[in-house]
Amino acid sequence: MEPWQQRVVDEQGELAARINRLTAFIQSGGPFNLLPLTDQHLMVEQLRLMNDLNEILRRRMARFGVPT
Image 1 (cartoon, rainbow, N blue to C red):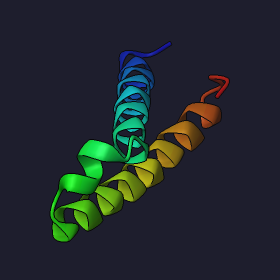
Image 2: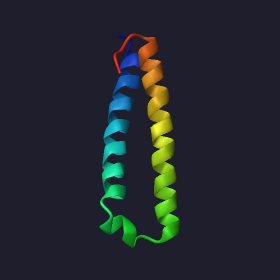
Image 3: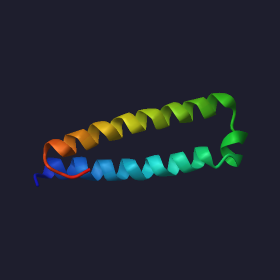
Image 4: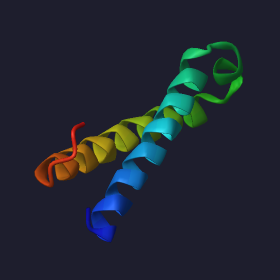
């Protein structure tokens, strides 16, 4: 695997972990629900964009033969 390909794989793995942590926080209810609505909306939007980027990275990985 080329170094740039490994960087994509590493980035996707790190991003997936951040997605999992943010998803858990949002779904936890309590602490998330105590935030102002604007912050809640921004965090949900952040999660959506993180998921979009994750999908792009997974598609790139598939193009160079890494199972996703």
